[in-house]
Image 1 (cartoon, rainbow, N blue to C red):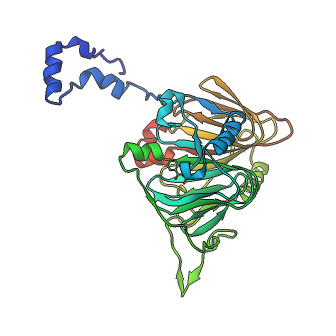
Image 2: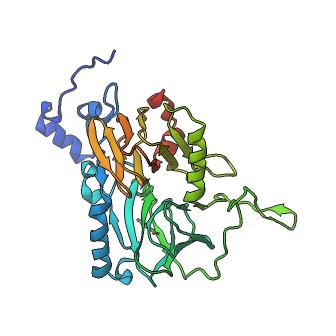
Length: 347
Ligand code: 1HN
């Protein structure tokens, strides 16, 4: 059924015919058809890639010496996938990754933009992100959301460098021609989070429940880790221990385009993961081990980040016989689901 004819190339046509077409902005489909819809399986330019913390950290600290915040607005080194062209600043088709540095006393100015963003805290103490007037503390392993359209700025009131991993749907927004930013004045008198900070409760003001499209912006790593540990205790060894970051009001993905999860592999555990269509990014919160991504071995340790292309085979192994291995992951599944392709690709 998938035995299709070779459709040839543009060179099979007379050059003056192709020129006549192009002169009136026409192009024949058939020479491109097989690469546009390859028979049987999709293709991706995304390559399995690992970005090592030991390589990133010194270069990022150097950026802190070379480039003041006023010259950068956001002082970031982008984790670019070589298969997609480094200058395209893409980890995968929809996901952008960057490691951002804020130094003590610095502020990354207030702005809002169409791309959805999230931060995973890697190193440091005493910084915060103010998102939509809410002051979100940032501690190691926390996930802090900056959904589309919300004002956000970063402040570092502690000591030493502060570093986090930015995860954005920027490539998608750029592709859709909707990527833009608005600058704003600093947000005054930010309030602490009032909803879902601890117990799943939300404020009621004058008898009415408050409502927000994104009721929870900060997900505390220590609480997530406790949930993973509890789940690990009650899960059979062959089953992967994973929790998904949800919007607590809807139960849906916490951002519209990128899904986030946390994973724990107990001491000595290994897992073969299901092949999935969405590309996926893994960031190591604690522990070390290795992955086989389409047969390519990636060794990783704390704060390393690696990317698994869509449809790739994936095996994960904890390299420690004593300690757990924990990841935060980000993947493109919300886009695949909304486009209706998820079922056909992963059925
Ligand atoms: C952005 O707004 C931030 O707010 C970080 O920290 C990285 C990359 C591209 C476009 C906007 C931030 C970004 C970004």
